[in-house]
Length: 103
Image 1 (tube, rainbow, N blue to C red):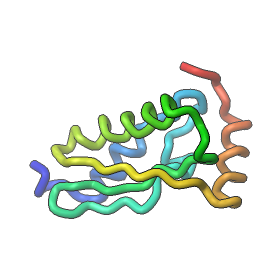
Image 2 (image 1 turned 180 degrees about the vertical axis):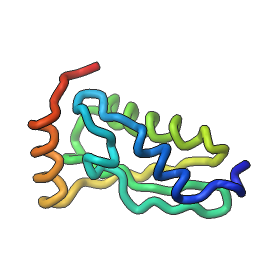
Image 3 (image 1 turned 90 degrees about the vertical axis):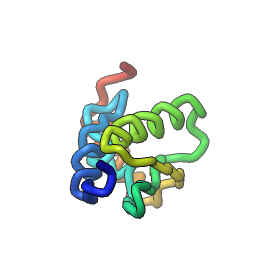
Image 4 (image 1 turned 180 degrees about the horizontal axis):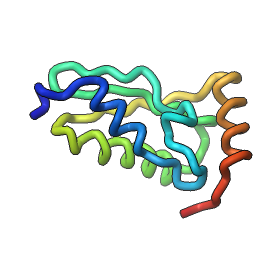
């Protein structure tokens, strides 16, 4: 099955991963970057507004990504990075507009 999937399939699955406290997907929030699919492995970067968020939140977000994408029959490698100033500004604007609180 893994050989039949495309980056489009991966993008579709990632588009369904919602932020737990903001009524937007991680893709819409600009939190998923650098998506690559090679030999049945999806590699991507999870961009966080700040790196010092609690480990439990980092784990939750990365695990949500892995759960969505592994349904396609591939392995998933998630790296983390910090958003740049423009990405953080856009994220915080969407957070303010779409805040729903913890799940």
